[in-house]
Image (cartoon, rainbow, N blue to C red):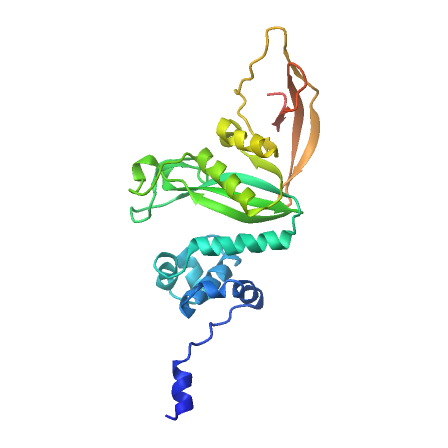
Length: 279
C-alpha cells in the first residue's frame, strides 16, 4: 500500500447521504457531532420522522431507514453530542428565518405510555394521548405558528416528585410552562399571542408571566370556573353564533360560540364554545 492510500484510509469518511432535503437541513448541525456515525443517525432519525410511519418509534424508524435499532438507541443515550447546543442552534436558526415576524405560541403537554423502569421520570400519571392514568412519561411543549406553519420550539420533561434525581428540583407543569415562555422571550422571538388549555388558563403564575410581558392570550377554562362579582352586577350571555371548524385533515365540524359577560365589559373577555348549545 502506497503512502497516498495509507493517508486516505485514515482520513475521516464522509457521512452517508439520505435524501437532498434531509442532507441540506442537517448540514447546519454537522459540527455538533464529533463522530460521523452519530451524524448519520441524526439524519436517519429525521428521515424516519418525516416518513409515512404511523408509529415513529426507534425500532420502526430503524427498519424503514435500514440501520439497526441499537444504533439509534446508542445515538440517543450515549452518543457524544449536546442536546442543549443542538436546541440553541435550532432556535437561533428559527429566529433568523422569522426575521422578527410575529408568531403565535402554543403551550401543551404530551403524555406517552411507557413500559419498564429504565427510562427516567416514567411514572403512573395522566396521559393525554390515551385520556387516562397509566405508566408513562409527560412533557410540556411549546410550538410556534407562523402563517399556518406549526413548528416545535422548546420541550421540557415533567419530573414527578417521586422520580426526582438528587440534582433535580420539582416543578409543576405550569411552572415549566412559565420557564418556557421566559426562554422564548430571552431568545428574542416576537410573540403575538399565547394559546393554552385549561391547565394553564386556570394557573395564576402562568397568567402572571403573560401579563408581565404584555402578551395577548387565548386560554381555556373549565365550565365550572368562577368569577367574583359585586352583588350589584350579573352574568349575561350574548346570542349563539354558528361557525364551521375545519381540521388539519380537511374534515369539518359545526360549532357555536357566544360571549359570556361577567358584570361590566372588561379587557379580559370570556367565550363559550360548544358543538350543541341546546344541551
